[in-house]
Each structure stands twice: as structure tokens, then as C-alpha cells.
Length: 319
Image (cartoon, rainbow, N blue to C red; front, side, top):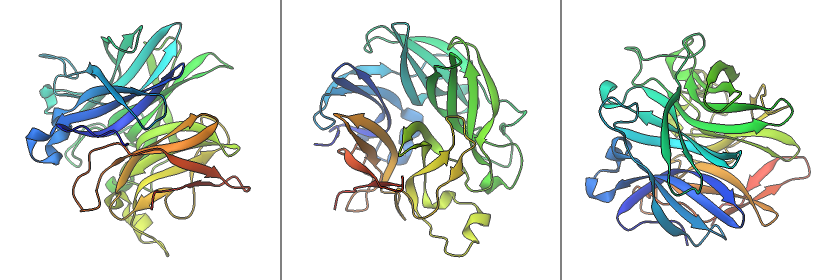
């Protein structure tokens, strides 16, 4: 069964493995809002656990909004979790009432058991040397969806995130931002690992090594392709999950040719996350549009991932 809650919509999510348990943290908002478009300003972080990626036990919520002048006083958004020196670190996105949610910042919360989380405050904001800040031409300052990992050769920590470059046509400024840290607390923004020109934004990045290459999974809707991209022969307006490929974990990354890895005009399955489980790879995504054309708001069952002989990747989407 998929992860569906009777009283809440569920969307973006991230995973953490603790022994045989797979924990999922997800954005949620009450269905009592009536309109699913209102969920973003009412998002909190829920939590569930599974051993087979199908049957989920819901646990107490992980994070909610802060107070007063806190950077996350309006809502808490997408992140990632990693364990270091016996402590779980959750990097997440916060939006504040101070800017009416228009500015996104990266925060940190820590835990020793994945159940009780202590917020540590803001750790990273958009750097204007490379990245777009809030301005009249665009609706938000995009700096969200942190994906953090440890690079064992240097001992440093790296973060990929949804960001926008500070130059070029507005509809093509989407990049994969990059930052680095030595201690998980002090972060320095660096130039992006995927250059602008193709998309409005690339949401919910995830780094993985699969099929003999480094990949960054990302997602967008059919309306997020740039005008330059739309003008090319053979362009297909689809949304969902796709991948970038590069020679190493820091790229530079290029866009894979061909149709989306998991895509359709409605972006019906969104923000896919790869996970290795019981010796095989799977992709989970959340249901954006259901069979009746309504907002789904639930996490799918795992979809098998196949690596072809040429290193290309295919997701076996349910019929």
C-alpha cells in the first residue's frame, strides 16, 4: 500500500536508513484547508517508518514552524537526513512570515534517535555572487531542498539544492546550487554544478551513483521548461522526475537526452527518490495528479529501477 493519510496531503519526502528500518520524512498539510494549493504555506514535516517500502507506520511529527522572527516561522519544507558521529542531521527549508514566505533559507535540526529533533537555526542563505536573490521580476528567492552528503576522500560535506542563477532569461535561471562545509554547521556557497538555460528551476535534487555514473535526480512541471528549450525541434512538454549525469559527485552535470525518466504532461508522479533496498534499486514518488485528475497527495509504492547494458536507467512505472 502507498503512504496515504486520511486527513492530510503528503508530498515531497526524503529517506533515512537505520538498520533494517527505512524512515521517511515528508511534507504534510491538513486536507481541511480545502484547496491543495494552500498546502505550501501550511507545511509541516511528518514521519513514518517501514521495512519493505510498502507498509508504513506513522510516527510523531518531526518538525513544525518556528515562532516570531524565526526563519521558519511560516512553514518547514523539503530537506534530507544524514548521520554523522552518532547524531542525525536534518537539513531543511524554512520560510518566514517576515517576507510572507518569499525568501527560502536552509536550516538544521539534530536528533539522536530520529524521533525528537532540536532546531539549530539557519545554516545557509543564497549567495548573490552566483545566485538570484528576491527581486521584482520573480515570485521567490529560491534556495531550498538541500541534499547533503559526506565526501570521504576530503572529509568535507557537500550540499546540492534548488537555486536560480543571478543572470540570464528569467525562465531559464534554474540551477543545481552547491555549498560545502567542514563541520555541518558552517557552510560556504559555491558556484552551481549545473548551469542555467534549460529550466525555471530544478526541484528536490538527489545525488546517487548508479549505472556506472554519477546522477542527480530532479523534478519539474511541464510549465517549467525555458523558452529556449521549447523552441528546439522535437521538444515535448512533460514534467516529473529526470536525471543529470556527470563524471563525479560534483559534476559538471549535463542533462540526459530523451524523454523524462518518469514523466508525463501532468507530472502525475513527482519528486522521485531513488532508494537501494534488499539489493535492488527502486524509485518512490508522490502522486501529484490521480487517475481522476485531482490532486493525489500520497507517496507511491516502490517502482523497480532497471539499469540497461549501456548504463541507461529505466523506471518500471505501474500500468
